[in-house]
Amino acid sequence: MSIKRFAPALLVASIAAAPLAQAATTVTIGTVNNGDMVRMQGLSKAFEETNPDIKLKWVVLEENVLRQRLTTDIATKGGQFDVMTIGMYEAPIWGAKGWLTPMNNLPADYNADDIFPAIRDGLSHDNTLYALPFYGESSMTYYRKDLFEAKGLTMPNQPTWDEVKGFAKAIHSPKDGMYGICLRGKAGWGENMALVSTMGNTFGARWFDEKWKSEFTGEAWTNAVSFYVDLLGNYGPPGAASNGFNENLALFNSGKCGMWIDATVAGAFVTDKSQSKIADNVGFSLAPQNVTTKGAGWLWSWALAVPKTSDATAAARKFVLWATSTQYSDLVAKTSGIATIPPGTRKSTYENVEYITAAPFASKTLEAMKAANPKDSTVKSKPYIGVQFAAIPEFQSIASQVGKFVSGALAGSMTVEEAMKNAVKVSDREMKRAGYFK
Image (cartoon, rainbow, N blue to C red; front, side, top):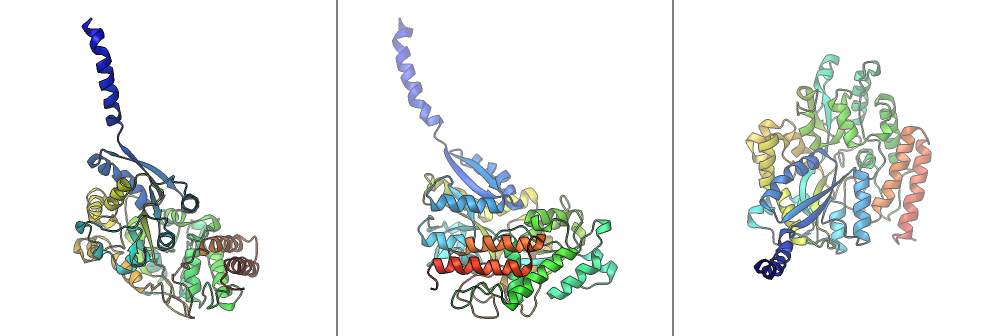
């Protein structure tokens, strides 16, 4: 009798307690499949252990796919993500549209003033931060010191593109599985066009003139893209038109590339003996110049933002603060070594003697980032801000299509002249449609 009498009460109590056991908030994170982000995913268990009420769900994608997914989701208010990995292109544009949660009222111990002003400004709109930087980067030249020494070559602090071509020719030896140079060839505004845009800058090109019209069929762009196609076609690896950052990193680390011009963030990977066969033989110099040094090295930051559509804003913000903090950097240093902490965002990192000593690429990274000026990156005046991109909403679509044409020229499916004519048509059509000119 007593058992029957109290059973309903026990049942009610168990039902009431059930929601408490399922109270964890899920935070869905969309990020790129770069090494630093993969490391962040692994270390995030430490965050979950100290925040048992938050469960992290990861969506890790290739760069072009990530950008497409995130752009579609936020533009359509899909609400699939609580944390988005975006950069200095998206943050101010999406922030201005009201799509992102402002990163205001940061805790005192976060020390936002420690973030490099150029990075902070690039992730802001109207002096409001809309994303917190995970790491910052410019671009630079990586080269094999042992190969250069064997050939009697000397790498300048900032080579010209003609010198780079000469070096590539001298060390190119396909029969030995050694290619003179690796460069981005995979189509995408953040893939091949990041590199090609900086080349264009140094050749005297710009994305748009003062009236927002393209100049792709002009001498500067034609010379830059022709040089790129010739250099990579003659002294690059087979299938270069399919290679992006990760593919070239793998080639360089396996000893198949004599030179590689790409993001400064790769410094930690090419000097890591656990993943690089040539870690002890890597040299560093600034990205190449040509008729000018302006815009030779890009400026970028992969950053974390919380979209307005998130239904877990507080939990998402908590994770973003953790992942971009000095405490996270300390965790990376403890688990992977101080040379692998996220670079390019904080002044204190480059004031740390231990870091500078452990990271042979650090001083060159800092030099490259200081030289990058988004407001003054071309010989001729320009109406847009940005080194390797133009900070306008239409750029992503235009540059993605132009990237396909340039990749096509590299693959041999069209001539450089055809690629540039197509680029003009696409660019002017999109800009005219958007009302930049009639």
